[in-house]
Image (tube, rainbow, N blue to C red):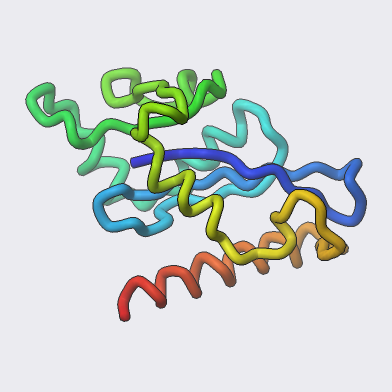
Length: 143
């Protein structure tokens, strides 16, 4: 699994929101989403947003199985939330988060573009637009 965050804002640039995403590298599905402030609670909410089947099956402590490692960037909140036996902090140049980075670069949500005139006027609309994209993305994987 690969985790990353995207900066966004609601109403004006002073109301920052971070979109925290978890992507399953084996199936390229978005398996966890949380929108909120960039703090430890956000990493915890992202972990809690994972389906129980993924959280339990993928993170059973089997030392011989290294494919169930979660790769993240250097955000310290991940280290406090994710199981240390299955968490690896990596630089973007390693390629271990390549699926997540590619997903971030190719997402088609105008509200998440850095310099944009498109923005949400309410947090509910912002979260709704992100979930709409996630559902559309999942539907495109099935084709």
